[in-house]
Image 1 (tube, helix red, strand yellow):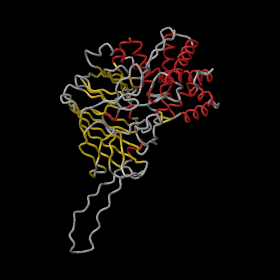
Image 2 (cartoon, helix red, strand yellow; image 1 turned 90 degrees about the horizontal axis):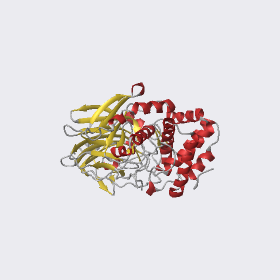
Image 3 (cartoon, helix red, strand yellow; image 1 turned 60 degrees about the horizontal axis):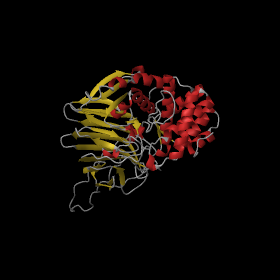
Length: 485
């Protein structure tokens, strides 16, 4: 997610942006003349192995404990959606392959505000109720015995508030505009506004998304484009995705395709007559991806691209960056800095994702520092200028928002989790030198592709990779109430 505020630091041209078991059958009656009843239908066992890449170890999120659950591990989401702008009704069928992690008499997912039309578990009709932004299914589950949940639903999309005081704060989730188009921004949560989900970062899953729209409209989603059948647009994610990194945009879009480094297919989606000014800026994407690959290794996914939506913010949604047209008002340099920032997250945040929102610094610190290094190269400011800027920003933000390692629930993604850990990474860079620092960064994202990580695992990785103990440096920068010396 882009930077929330611009720090008033005198730095020339420096931009700050922010297996299902069969149910028992009824045994035959021992009495020959006893009335017989129809046999209980059996459900064929499902082979869940195709979705094992979506296996996670979910944890209860300490910052937003009401969102998500550690009792379920969703392996795969199959979403079939139909959007009617004339009625503002979204109709959906969500098929979830789920590995329960605990025995329980029922289970719940995050979901709002739709009417549930039908629920089945392993093909058998089940009872599902929606209350307090949760879908509760009254079916018992057993730990490590996967199930297939199918939910049919319909209704008008409604957003949910963002827990932040950022300048670009907007409601989260599936947003309906006056012309009937849809778009999403959903960090730290919001997928619950368009499909039933385990809406927390520790549960990554695979996705297949199919969206049907009226003639002349387009549907854009996260993942790899998987073809178009008439007015139905399809996308597939073969790399696991955290729910906050999924996206959906529907409107009268036009697609421009391009090729990135070593043949990566790129897609730019824009609204003709509205986003024409921005399109040339999107076309700079191969330059940013090439610059990032040179330092951090191969781009981690099969495709890349960006979709422009009527927002004031931007989001690193996986394989398809969601970027707000409102950022263009800040000028081309600011827009392109944001775009680079979001592409950086494909490595730092998307392929390597934080286990919980306590470690948001692990995403934003890296993306911010890398953005600053790019700006330093482009605008030719000195290393001393970069050091001064980061430290001055760090001092202001720790005083206002506290240390980055203990983020406040009401201040999600505010500037302390960007600038303060970026300042820490500058210290680590200085201690290691460029060669060893970039080797560390490259190994971090390449060796741990498609995983979730936290502070402890990051420190352990740094210490092992460098052969030195940086525990004190990292902990001090994450926990100190004032800027470390």
